[in-house]
Amino acid sequence: MASDYRYHSNIWLEEPEESNPFAAKASYCHGYDVSGQIIPQASWFEYLLLMFKGDRPQASESRLLEKLAMVLANPGPREASVRAAMNAGVAGTNHSSALMAALAVGAGQYGGAQEVSICMRLWQECGQCLELWGNQLFNPEEDERADIWLPMEHAPGFDPNGDRTPAPVLQSLDFLAGLAPSNGSLTWLNQNRATLEDTVGYPLAISGVAAAALVDLGLNEDQGSMLYLMLRLPGAAVHALEQKQMGWKKFPYYGPAIELADDPGPFESSKPEQAPL
Image 1 (cartoon, rainbow, N blue to C red):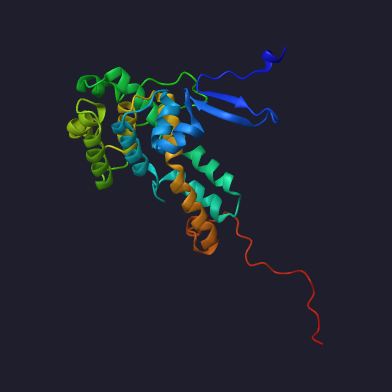
Image 2: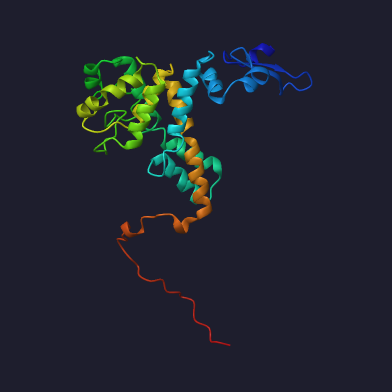
């Protein structure tokens, strides 16, 4: 009967402590001893890729992931998921709420994880064919669950509000392409960026760069979407903490844009005044 209540995992194996079945005596990730081998010998990004892919990564792969993580670590206050965390922070809510706010907003189709997922699927469909990209960017495959994801309103991986590619996007693409395979997605994107931008009519976004990097790392769209969500949390966290310390008086609100349809005027107390003592 006990076997009916076991969890099954191809990623993780544990040996329980004899005196405490809720504690592990030893843990193995894809066959590697976590405490005896991985922690003493591997880097964080080697471990991360091992967990996601199941194979010991090459040094070039862990280096690419490390630099991609640095590119994504802090999208900055202009990014919607960071601002969501800042709103939670200035409100004084608990830390988990700030991170959940960032995850919720950062999961969407405008610069979010769902957009990255769609981009990665397009890499599978279009490869390195400019003609296919020209068609599919305007007609990305839509999720049939329309109640969850609405149709894309812009070419995935590009910024519909921009006129030209921001310098950090260009710098990140060029640097990451230098770490990626010479025949890989980042290299091709770097070489054909201007043509793709002319096709869609607006510039490449960092989500498009991230999608190409995650494809070069050999990840599928679900793995890439998860990593993209995770790697952007440090910036959300530090901005939420900062706003909590600074307080609401320094936080911008939209008071001048609010108009009351029926302004009752200044508040007047109905309580009778008391004579001075």
